[in-house]
Length: 202
Length: 202
Image 1: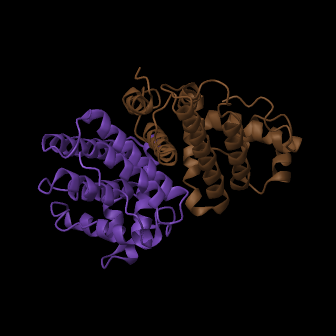
Image 2 (image 1 turned 135 degrees about the horizontal axis):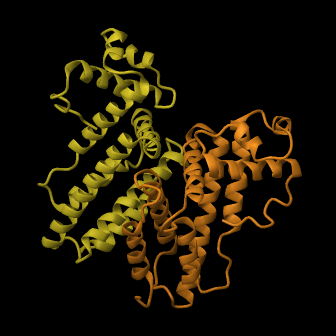
Image 3 (image 1 turned 180 degrees about the vertical axis):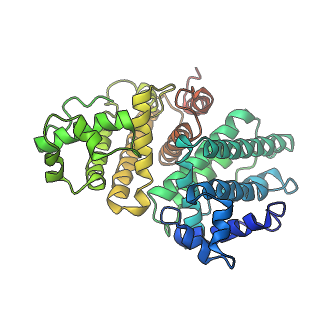
């Protein structure tokens, strides 16, 4: 996930904290993360963290916004063919193999999702991300039907299906699969799905 | 979920603890659950809990085994038509609306899933459940093709797809949907899926 100029409009102090948190989460994951871990990745004083945030939970809501915003900023741009855009989006959400640090970040994002039922601010973040991804999928499918890359399907239903399928595979990959394990059998289902909706079976 | 005679072969002391935990989890959920909550549902002494278990986390591994075993015992029996078995299994995993107590139990089971990456015993429980559900789905699909209820599909791939779809919808239902919210839009994708694999479109 590349962040490039993302976060340029943030308060510089907060952005520094977010960047330090990003590094700390990749190193330590979410469950064991402490304010000290974040401060260790940070060349300014720990007091700055407490100036902006009441504590870890308060900070993590902002971090969630930061990281999900960064994710949304990396959604494939219109330009390449709809099928290629869809492949890119799937690869972004479901890399076949994953190294330790991106795995820890993916897992942390999933663990934070589990706070949604208990924290309305967290729920709203994930709702927005799901909505944005669903809309991106609908848009890709719609353009793909127009350009005759995809067969004529119900765009709303298929986008919703694909989103649940992607979230389900990601949930299984992060919970019952070992981090270093390839998820090829799980991705075979996505390939079968793509073959089914594509005009040219590959 | 009915448990009937499930757990009859357990140590009676442990079974009583499991039953009390079952009630306590439905009342309080998992994150706030204490040993005292369990003892409150229990007409024997709290010391009995500590005789069998070191503490909450130790007890919850057994509870997970108990509840997932109970779930596996309720998987539809061969007998009704494959399509009806599939409908029953989907309804079991994805009730359209859900009351407070079953919701808290579903959510607790999902929160416990998040312990899998950190606890091998938990990971193995969920792996086994996924494997058993996947095999049940394969069996239903295979018999449905034989009896001409389902079109000729790749049983392994479709069972895997259906499993990821069910887990994904359940994950979304439990995290971003409100408990009392109907998940009709999410279930419409399952209906579309069933129409696609069925010989008779309903």
